[in-house]
Image: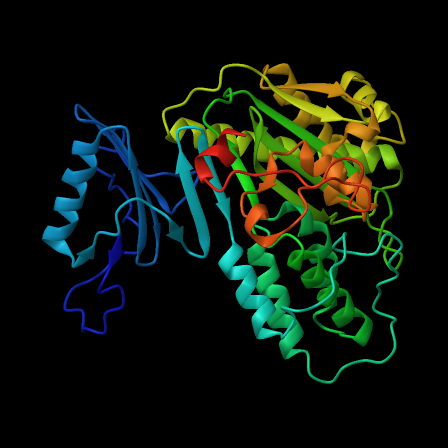
Length: 402
């Protein structure tokens, strides 16, 4: 739905409270309201069923298992505001959404094309990775550019594009470090991301309707990855069943003294995100009773979790230890070791070779339902140079079923 009069310029004749005055409570808070896990999410549960509203300024998504409940909410809104009913969601805030019995597919194809067109790169040559494997990007680069406006705007648009493109998250994270001191090499690296996107414009994420509701997460770090500060990069991705719902690439706030410590802090960040997702699921009346599986490729970090005795070398990470141990003890999280070659989260911590990148993407339910129209490769674990082109049916239903 879309609200016509989102921005008002009228005069207020009464006091407006942005927060409730002391002593007041929200009526019917147990049955619904603004959810603390996401302040843009509003829910209601009554005899007519459960309904959820996701609000962004004047754009609203509404969902319920009961069509009558949805229509009743629309009627209530229409009595107070001028509402435009846009029907089944197909496009929302730059996200293209395709639905079928098999699941939901989201991508930002139109948004990607607009970026390429604005920068005149629709006809550019393709590259197979978003960032060079051995890149040397730093603040000490020469050939500084005087005007960083175009670069900053481009990075902002690329950050928004990571909503459906986890494969560029690491590259965009690195490039966003140079907003204050831009060199020609940084702009060239940003254009490389666009050349990579040109080869997979319609790539997106499939949320399968056949998946289980079990949470599993992958946590990784790249120790002392920043040559200027020697801070580490942490990365994680979290799945519900077989589809990915959350991912991040982040620079650690402090310097880790060892690779085990860097991995351990990455586990703490991932545990925080798991806790938030479990809280969000409760807002949707879904109880995640089974312990979430947390995969890590560092045996040292896993041994730290099991060791209740702190010695001199690990005392300074005691806060992170107690946070993770509390979740493990409560049965919320089970830490599990896996080989590094299967660590999906490394896509968010380092620049990868073509074959490795596409092998990991193939295990994240990342696909391109427009590949048959754009003549693109649907890459395999062999990498772009040795991959074979898959044949796609022109219907979204068949692509989703695949």
